[in-house]
Each structure stands twice: as C-alpha cells, then as structure tokens.
Image 1 (cartoon, rainbow over the protein chains, first blue to last red):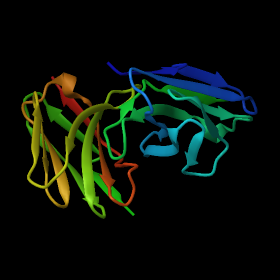
Image 2 (image 1 turned 45 degrees about the vertical axis):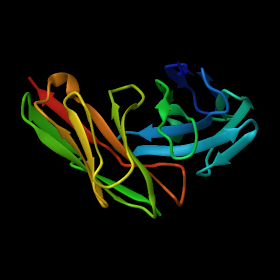
Image 3 (image 1 turned 120 degrees about the vertical axis):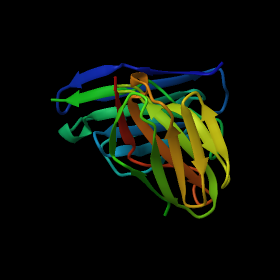
Length: 112
Length: 110
C-alpha cells in the first residue's frame, strides 16, 4: 500500500534561519507531488507541484523553494525564514491528473 | 478560473441531529469533485470522489451527492467523532490541479 511520510511534525525557527521540510512517498512510482500551506480560516494554498524528478512548478511568488531530487522525495526549503512563513505545511501526492490526493500528516512551522 | 464556495463556515449539531454541508462550484468542465475530512493538526483524509451530476456515494453516516452546480455532504445521525473540518475540492478540464474550498468546521455535541 502507498504511504506518505512528512517530517518534522512541529518546528520552531528564528527569523532569518534556513528551512528544510522533507516528504517521501512509498509504494508508488512517478507520483505527482504537492506542497500546500494552510493558514487558519484561509483554506489550502498550493505552493509547488511536481510531475517528475527535477520538474517544479511554483504557484505563488514567495520566500520558499522546492526540489525533487528523487522520484518519491519532495523537499520544501527556504534560505531565510520570515515571520509570514509561519503556518501548517502539507505534502500530498496523487497518481495522475485530476486524481484524489493523499496528504501527509503536516508540519506546524512557527517562525519567531 | 475555478471557484469553490463552502457553506456554512461552521456548524454545530447535537448528536443525532442530521444536516447537510454545501459545496458550490464554478468550473469549465468538471473532471471530479472531492470531499476530504480534516481533524485538527492533521492532514486531510480522502472521503469521496464524484464525477457526474446525479452521482451519489456513501460511507457510514456520510452521503455525498452532486448536481451541475453544487455538492452536498449529508450527515445522518452524527456522532461526536464526526467532528472535523470537511473540505471540498474540484478538478476541471482547465487545470488538473484541484481548487479547494475553505471548508466547513463541524462540531457535534454529545
């Protein structure tokens, strides 16, 4: 069966520090991968998506970047965090276009 | 541009009090409508996919229905463990990336 792992679960980082959140998928190959941010009362905001290794599409300009070094690994990064980067970050995968998502358990990031 | 509006934003029910959540959408060529359940501090969990008007799907106390303009998530005789935020999303021919609504926060009191 397919599983998705996302870590860490919680993270408190000072302003200006770097960030690296990792997401891996097991039990499937060539998944579509996604990073979302969820702010309280504002719904899910798509940050990045990837349809293959090294292929990254950005949905909104921001202080974040994403990479896909392996087929089932998706990384969200920042060189210098801002207070506004605080939020709940979710990784997800789907098997193809317009298919259901399977989400990770999320990372609660607090920038102080 | 696809649009998804969920109502109400929040709903409080007594245990056993049936109700419905609404998801209204505007898309160019619906490819799928999805319902998810999200517990506090966790990622959304998939519930249903609906593809065409008139389709219905059920799971325990939940039943999802679809028309050409909206979807309903009917909750029959809810229990406190049904308390969660319910998210609706649509995928269209214009973009295969689903558009999510803001969700309905459901609280069921014992």
